[in-house]
Image (tube, rainbow, N blue to C red; front, side, top):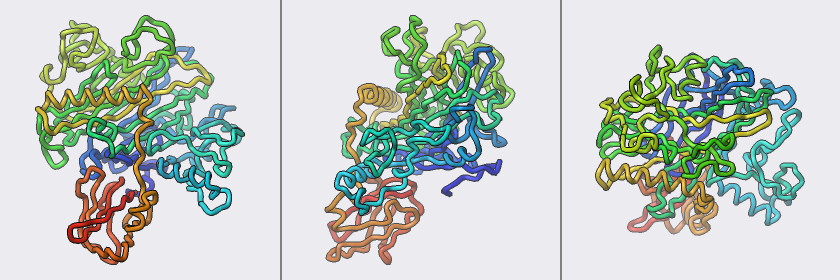
Length: 556
């Protein structure tokens, strides 16, 4: 992939890969992710090295009313005709604007691996940073911890080693990241005219981060962590308006392998949207084959609710607890047809109505069938199975409704809440992939899927994700390093290999972290072409008779 994508409006935007575990996905910095908007191709490969994709594209949606009851919206979908509601960079704290210089300066993502951070901390403690024998990595030196001028404030989190309030790696300060790999970026909705939703801007500054854990040493009980990616949006109101009846939406176009035979639904208690195959064979060249997987999007912790309202907003079984956050409050599936009441949104009201669980013609979603029976009861969640507490004993799925599987897209929303000038609202969510290739499909597969979602929820809510063991890099494994040296680290098109002299092997195998073979051949001139590999972490094995030596490397 190119280092930059060229947009149709002659602007550029940066991208990078989140690729530390069994998910290899493309991250963008302007409100959408998981795809290449120029080539219109998806990049959510799972498992890594499989060539199979489970998501086409994803994006954040926002909608709410100001104190004059004027509707404001900001969203992304497919960028048709360069439609865009978000731009890079923070918002000026004095005049609430963003200039072109700031937009360009922040048009990137900052990516760090835990191993890189640990290496820096070790070298600082040994005095190697101070004496100049250790070169501090660029991502640490240029970590956007604080802005300048009217943008002076804390941006990306950092550990202030000497507690002086200023970020300086040469004082031992370093980025405060989550997971074994994190990408951080900042964007806004104020720099230009909203051409996606056609609504007035909020004046929001949004801090985004994506992270994942590499837990390849864990047992199958903990398997879900290796197939999950985590995200956070921190929304800061830099404008002068107070917004009420606010929603945050997570829009997903799931292409689960073969996109033409998917179903979607939700689980209310788990705050999850779920995509799964219409039958037990996801056929075709892009399909996952027999006993296909499930792809979930789960709200782990939503925005702070406005206060006591007599509702269990986060579905944890407790009503109006202190500092209650919000979970999934609506789930809606719509089609991609234009000028259809259940189709593609185009106006400001359209986007907000979908966030609010209302069809484009103003008709509320009703329980059962296609969700448009005027004689039925209005509801908040489409296709919840048996999980909607408002309709006990009345299961509703696409299959039960007689709806054919096809190319699906859906919207999870959380709200309503209020955000005043200077206030912040945060949403944490995860993309969880689950597959059972042994048990009966769909019964055992569905049970495993719900169990996997529950595990991720439990680990997140109890702070157990931080205990995940860190992957070992080539440079940190002295035994491997003495036998086999692979460079550059990370690599792009080729890796070069230096062998321990007594070994001298010319046969190699490259596998992913699950042991699946991705490349093999003969080592010629100590060089291996890796251009066919997807970005991610791999194991190189050099084979001599019945023994082998190994080393890890990272493909950009």
